[in-house]
Amino acid sequence: IHGHAAEMPDIPYERQLDVHWTDVPPVLDGKMDDACWPAAAVAGDFRRLDQKHLPARQQSEVRLCYDAENLYVFFWLHEAYIRKLQAGAPDDTRDAVDVNKDVVEIFLDPLRTKTRYFHFMTTPAAARYDARISPESGREIGTYTPEWAVAAHVGDEHWGVELRIPFAELCFEGGFIGTPQPGDAWGVNFCRD
Image 1 (cartoon, helix red, strand yellow):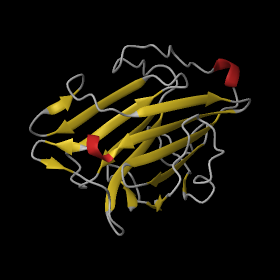
Image 2 (cartoon, one colour):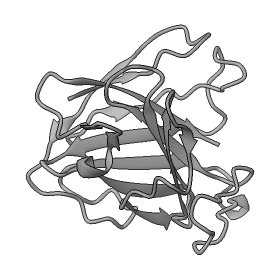
Image 3 (tube, rainbow, N blue to C red):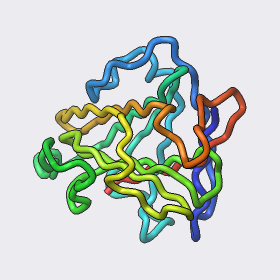
């Protein structure tokens, strides 16, 4: 599959990331020691949301792979001030992640509509937030509770999170998205707060 950056206002360009199939899924532990990650293409060169011409203050790398059942996402987040990392509590109430602390987000737009997408967010403590957005239902938080998993790891100068998002959980009323086929293109956006 290919992941295209979702076209948002004022973003000067669209990027493409080739996502590869894996026969051996990663063990979710927030570490980049699984065989699938070194071969994965890297989404990098993150930009500031408020000043897109400037690089992000802390750079990030995102890798993706998939198998018949799941999309796997790995965030490697460089952090010069690891002792100041604001992880939040792992037992935060689901869908109540404090966005004023360190978080990463992924927006998945499998049909590339720009109006129907999924939003996943997590923290260095692996708290979870998820929402489904569509014109018909608006932002569904709390009523959309997909079974997805995340694990986090905090290192000396970085933190990492690994996500497993089952394709079966990516559905809208009247339709299941399904496992991507070779050549499919999805809209995707990564964010680090």
